Amino acid sequence: MPIILAIESSCDETSVAICYNGKITANVIANQTIHENYGGVIPELASRVHQQNIVPAVQQALTIAKVNKNELNAVAFTRGPGLLGALLVGVSFAKSFALALDLPLIAVNHMQAHILAHFIDDPMPKFPFLCLTVSGGHTQIVLVKDYFDMEIVGETLDDAAGEAFDKTAKILDLPYPGGPLIDKYAKDGNPLAYKFPEPQIQGLNYSFSGFKTAILYFIRDNKIKNPQFVEENLADICASVQYSIVNILLNKLKKAAKQYSIKEIAIAGGVSANSGLRIALLATQDTLGWKVYIPAFQYCTDNAGMIAIAGYHKYLAGEFVTQEISPLARMNF
Ligand code: KG4
Ligand code: ZN
Image (cartoon, rainbow, N blue to C red; front, side, top):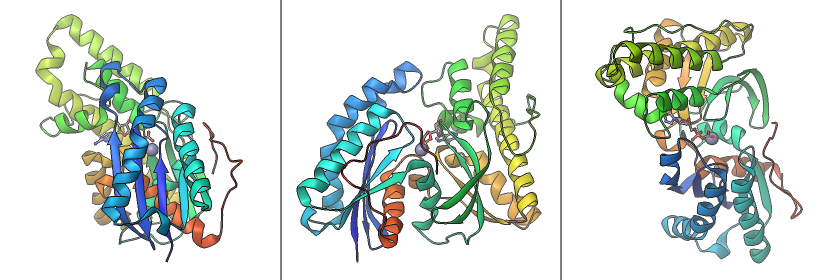
């Protein structure tokens, strides 16, 4: 009956969760609103706010889960990938906490954890499955053969899907992170109002940098003709951009599903919160016979619940690390 405390601090969310024998009984997320005015996450500021948030978040998680720190069996933490300074706060805290309580340490890969969020609640995908992991920093199609046996079969060659959303939002003068706002405005717009080119990339890889530039020029040219273009057509612009990004994402996913003859399909990462993507993916259950897995909203964007469930499976496998462990800004599976 392991009780695991998990820490996530790879970007701009300080999160602490408790996993009680495979069930997540607390998932505290302290958002950092300080970055809204800067159009992106400022690494130095993120580290400082993690430092302020981490102890209260741990106390809150223990209280919510009704667990005393002396009952814990292990401490799991995000080792990478992410912002080094931000990771350092979580890793240093986890190490000190584990040292003080004489607990084993479990290092978790953030991108694997996004995928393993599917093992928090039912229904859970069956191995092997394909997972489209779409976040602010990554866009990957992953062949998941087992909990920690994963292979990236396609990925972005430049920008991530989340960046395509956030950079479009910036062009439209919307605050960071723009993805959820584009999603919100898109609900009232016509997705076919404007057409954007689909990148022509070989195989299962993606590219979003040309797409972003196309939007930049499209807005610039239309603003020359009508300075109020964005204000007057915001919903249609957002709906059309979202429709295009979702199409790009799904077309490669369909190709991968065909190539690997797999119909168990999951999505993960912050962009999997996008309603357009969720609806389009669900539609494939009827059109393509896929069995689709979409995480609950609180487990899509960065959270420690996913680190806790990954930590739980590493605990069962006896995979621990020593106090010499350090964070990694870049980290492979
Ligand atoms: O996984 P995540 O929380 O952090 C990273 O590891 O990057 O993903 C954050 C990304 C941001 O780019 C954000 O704009 C995007 O996920 N995002 C969304 C939505 N919610 C979050 N993008 C589109 N629609 C959403 N509803
Ligand atoms: Zn993430």
